[in-house]
Image (cartoon, rainbow, N blue to C red):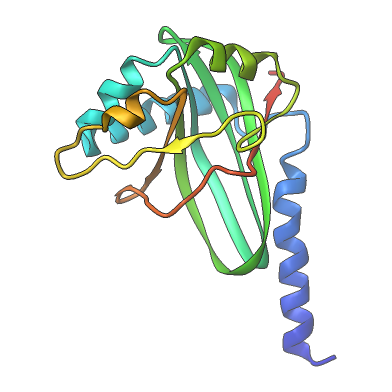
Amino acid sequence: MNRSARLLGLLAVALLAIPLAGCAAKPVTSLARIEQDANRTLERLGRVNPGARDLVGRAHGVLIFPRVYKAGIGIGGEFGDGVLREGGRTTGYYRIVSGSVGFQFGAQKHGQVIAFMDRRALERFKRSAGWQAGVDGSIVVADLGASGQATTLQVNQPIVGFVVGEAGLMYNVTFEGSKITRIEP
């Protein structure tokens, strides 16, 4: 095996460690930092798109992952810690982890905001030991157009998600397959 193939193999193994590291019980990020970063993520979302702020404001609960790290070379992983807020109050801390196989190369950091528009969907989420997007509940990725307003279809969905990059809302992303578990502080 040549040197470049070995290096690629080692890099792939290192990338696999990202989602596995997310399975640890102790939060990687301090709770105070998660709270501060969550506030900044919501502020950024509102600046980029006022319609998103209004939609999130009407939600029964909002799950905010301010820093989600994603990387892959053929095999990829995604990982981040976040906070659940209900009525503006923090009610729990959560971790998101996912893995994927396929054509992929690179790394990125982004924020994710998941708005529970339906109280029953929020309660099912909170009762689960490990909630998986696409299995335990489908998340509609919000597509807020130039007007900055969510469509009626999106507002009527039980769970709406936003992916916020450094430059604004990100498109062509999915929450499907992401597993979200509660972490104890």
